[in-house]
Length: 470
Image (cartoon, rainbow, N blue to C red):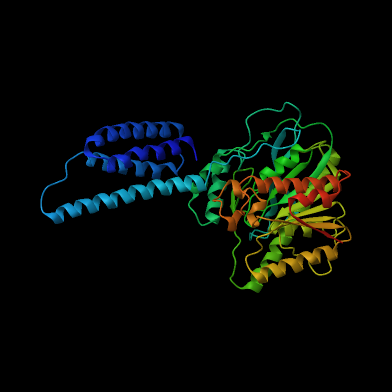
């Protein structure tokens, strides 16, 4: 909650006292409360109130009106009239309390996002890039000339002393951030203003900061179904601060909304049919499209690295590459890595694998699993069987890390953005899931991409239940 929201809620207390106080003490209490509420209201308006502030203000104004009403003697007359007056007062009091407490609850549940400072030794820079595959038709449109285009945010270790205005969390500029926030809210079935704090939030990366010298390992990331490229910003900035280049991809028509370089807005077009078999087939198709997107980005980045051109000129080491993803993005990362010798490691953040029969993986795999499960015994069994199939198809050792206290969205930035319901984001609080996800990923990537002498079993054990996979 912001200070103005807390102050306005606090100003209601003397009004409650005034309503219950003896007549002699009522006037000074109401006058003091009027001054306090007016001061808090003005301060809140000047500081730029969040939408949650308005129901609190309405509740405070209702309480002020009741306080002023109580300064006048009770009306004389027949008893029914007195009962009616008391009933109106009680109902109005309840309305004011409901408005104020409801606004206060929403202010607490949907906070102003405050993201942890990246834990590594490097400051972090960020750029946005767009690539088009001239040889690949866009699946989601009828125009045969439309080519598949993807947008990505790239985080990288910046040179010492890199400074400047921090990047907006959800977009390159305020317009894009607002559009993305509205699209995400719509995907959740909520009005756009609910995520306006996210549209204003800033990450820690500095746009276009000069990069630190040298070539660094590359991590490509695919978000969850309907997710956007910035949904794991805390994780990405953390990895970048430890010397990794992280590239998170928007998948047009799959991501909730994507804004192209020319300002074109591409909204999500995925719809479920309600038929489990058909929806499963569609999910396999969407996973393949995402995997192809990741392959396109990797190809372009390798080409640009070898040609010393593009946004990451001289910064990416194309010989050290990992694929990663959350939810459906985790499935896409596994599929993109299958048979691609350019990929050296894979991280699946609670994603149901969708490898086709006969697929093989030569890369080590780290799978982070939410201890809360999928929500159904059948889903849990299916997930376990699919995950076992990944390691059966892999020729390299891997690890499964089940993290107590986590739910499916714990492995994204969701705990910083939405109400802390355990069924959605687990029970570890807002920041702890991000710390665990980053620590596990760093240990795995340091071992697989940097060749560090890391005992992965020992490094992962404090973070959850570790199962080494053959």
